[in-house]
Image (cartoon, rainbow, N blue to C red; front, side, top):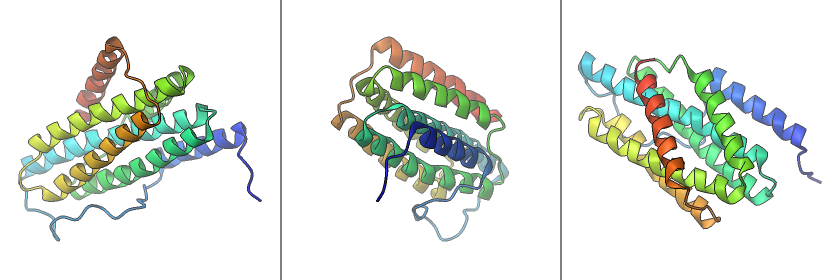
Length: 212
């Protein structure tokens, strides 16, 4: 017979996932979105630009792992825990896909990933402590903002990098689904000041991660 995990068990599992996110090569459950069969021919400038954009996206997925792990850890509702864990699993695919593209483009992941993870985990705990409906609302708003962010990257990505474009488009589809699921499960609309604060924090993160 299966038994429900204790808080200590779940905390240990969350710590293990944190180490895997930050230190282990990510493994995707789904194959990377299909694109051209061969790596596109890009200029050095285009490769650097694409790698920087994908590094920002990779940081976003590091933060997503932390957010959803924290929210899954803190909620007392088993059904919502499954929702957050499922979203984290899909985001782990994004983590693997973006890292693969960074490596293929000759770039590197952010040097500040431990900082991004720790900050996002703390934010996830704060959101969860405000109650499940607020936590779900935070999830929905986060995914909406990520969707807009990905739209901007699709516009800025070098036209020839169809492999990165395919990854970003699939990521965008998944983020839309996560936002819709959060609303369907009772997520509330966050107050405007909270949404502004989230946008400001995201701007700081994405600007910094573009270079570091």
